[in-house]
Image (cartoon, rainbow, N blue to C red):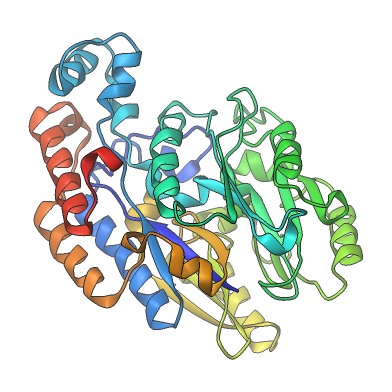
Length: 429
């Protein structure tokens, strides 16, 4: 079995509206001008790099934005342009939510339990409801359509609808898997919050995590529920993947990530004795520096020689304490032997690093061959996508531009060109 990353292609409506309460980067850059074209090309460059390193790479597509259908549910009437115009005039905040490009962060698309972990031998995937934030709660229906297409040819994948909205579920950003190898049974860790903390909500509910354990037919003895620390939430770690990341036998975590960390570590070691827990001390890297640099929101992957690599945002080497810790870690010859840095500043300024941009799915070679191949990348497709983005994606979006019909039309036509390039009919998505 192999792990495939499905990255979200940054959509043409990428902007800084500051919609995500508790996300420090999003709030800090609210009202700034964004660069959708640069953002999409940066994300595509990360996908290319993963392919160059020998990994299979997929993508999920931007959603239809602005989402006029959602605005119609809120009482606005007419064609798409009329609905958007009326929403902007009556309540601009509603149009800003309907315009968000947040589906780019596919770590929030779903939670995945691969078949070595499940009682029925199926891969279980639950679409996240993202009910805590209005702009993200819009996503589940369109995410579901894409995932149903992607897995339409696989009878051994159980794709579940979102949990009821009262049980907040934010997907894989609050889920980690430890295992000897990707094709062996593992320990799945579900991280929830308690709150609100300093006015920031707990986005992942404990009841949602418990429901996922049952729904995915996991052995309760190999499923661990952990609570995120109040300190992490208060500092702006709105999802667990801002303060911890796992891959095979390695858990890389901040000292202050979890409310009862020693008890959690004991549970992990009991269930997976070979687990290696790398804890970054708070006196070496503060929570503020961890969140500012997105040290933990990196992709931790196993290379073909069995060693592990961290793919980090450039910001991780621009924060002195983080850079020193990374250098010391690599010198120690532990399981993580290599670090690479990618420019993802456009996504980072809106609160999403390398790990936010990808959904990890463990698949067999047979399952991989049965996927809808339109969602998988190769170098030629990447070249065609880069050319399309350079031609169709807006170069800049300022806050006041969100109310302009010309921008709405440009975003719709850009997405239509993307669907055409990849061979999707509009009615499929």
